[in-house]
Length: 115
Image (cartoon, rainbow, N blue to C red; front, side, top):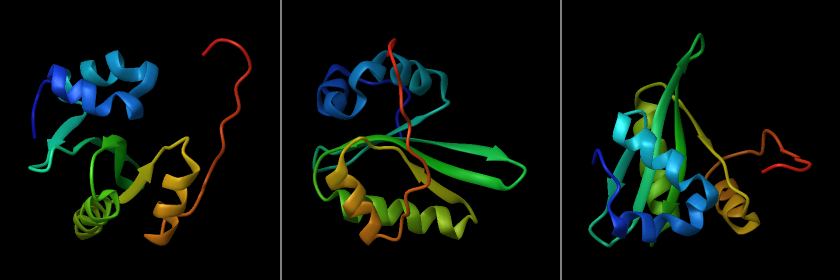
C-alpha cells in the first residue's frame, strides 16, 4: 500500500474519483485512505472506519481488471477481521456486480444544486 497517488494512479482512477480526486489524494497522503496497486495495473483506494459496531472497510474508488475478484478478496480479508464492507458507486452495472458478491443496497443519495 502506498502513501501518495502518482500521476499514473490518478489517471487510472480518474473515472472512479471524478470531482473527488483531490480529496482522495489528500486522504491517501495523510494515511486516512490507502492505495492498493495491483500488478495488472488496477488500483483500489480503501480505508477502515471504526464506530461502536466495530470496523468497516470502505472501498473509496477502484479501476482496472477483475473487479469482482479483487473486491471478493477484500471482502474476505475484512470478514476475517470482523469488519463490514461499504462500497459507494453511481454505476448501476457495478451495483449488479456487487449484488452477485452478496452486497445489498442500503441507501440512495439525492442532491439539488451545489455539487
